[in-house]
Length: 422
Ligand code: NAD
Image 1 (cartoon, rainbow, N blue to C red):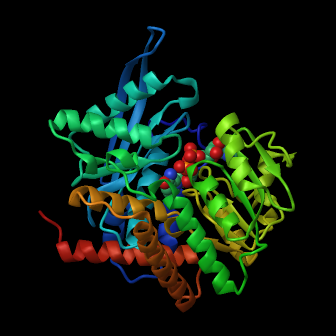
Image 2 (cartoon, rainbow, N blue to C red; image 1 turned 90 degrees about the horizontal axis):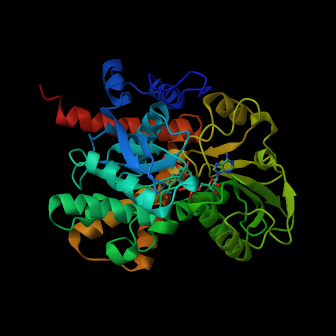
Image 3 (cartoon, rainbow, N blue to C red; image 1 turned 45 degrees about the vertical axis):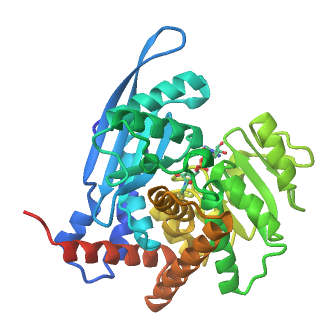
């Protein structure tokens, strides 16, 4: 990509996503020209965001919004704040959103956004000004019927509140449905904060049922202890699983008898990290992936399980909480080792599913009880898991290939029904 130095990224994440696509597309009888239309992002926006920092200095931040597909409905996808954000990554994440929404059958296309910044080094005021400027620059392309952002790495409900407020001020009316993952007090959905981790829990449960394993005592390692990883760990610990190792960007900890997750959540809330948690041993952050466990949950960033470490993975199941944590080369190695990978576009789809519920509730102006949200989520996750599993059995292929097959078919069908306007 033009704005990314070749030394910045060893692999193109978008190319990796397209290699996953191609593997599945090869098993489908779909016109190659149509497949090419499905693959390419519909619109990629690059922004230069000027800001005055607290100390009075001027700075320019690079921002992106990519709408990969708006064929099945408005674009949908999170906003990431991270120093490594780049166009290639945002395009890949937007593409995965298209296929994720199709796998779980919700009426959205795929989009994603990001700003190249290090939120850890910014004040709350600076983050608010950057978020508002980014939103204002995107006024013409986002909206409840166009493109609906949500949280991703380093963005949370407060940032979504600023997006919603900025958009509403420009529109001269309160427009809650422009963004999901908002605080519950201002149109957010109960259960949204936990939704991605809960979806991971439902997938791990479904896989355990398929493999005839019981949850109590199942040993789990989690890479990343943010929104997705910490909730997945908390809910699976409640199911009786033993969370034997977790890590975040600052460090990694382990305990063979199982970490006390409620106590660890308190520890991270006060210290900001899993590091130095009493009753745990400190381990090397990289070794989290090769921990001796039954289920590995990567819940940090993409390109973590690679051809260098895939052969060392000891888990029987990899449940992808993160987007794109496994490279295509690693996928082949994991499949050869007989490791089941619950692919990201299925495993972490709980977040976008409850985002859809939030959008529906905002538009109705009527809000559901948390129990209803969770029950509807469970229904969709179990149905989707079943459909992907059935397709993978029928075609004797991996769950990832099957999930992509299902998604590509659904997107292709809508393009053919709508026809191409010319
Ligand atoms: P988050 O910012 O809440 O948490 C990220 C966690 O990963 C943090 O604990 C961070 O310290 C850790 N981390 C970052 N870099 C790391 C590294 N190099 N090694 C180890 N740990 C590292 O983000 P999140 O919302 O939990 O998102 C995590 C992943 O899940 C991303 O891939 C995201 O795209 C995906 N995802 C998120 C949602 C959602 O609803 N938030 C939905 C679907 C998918």
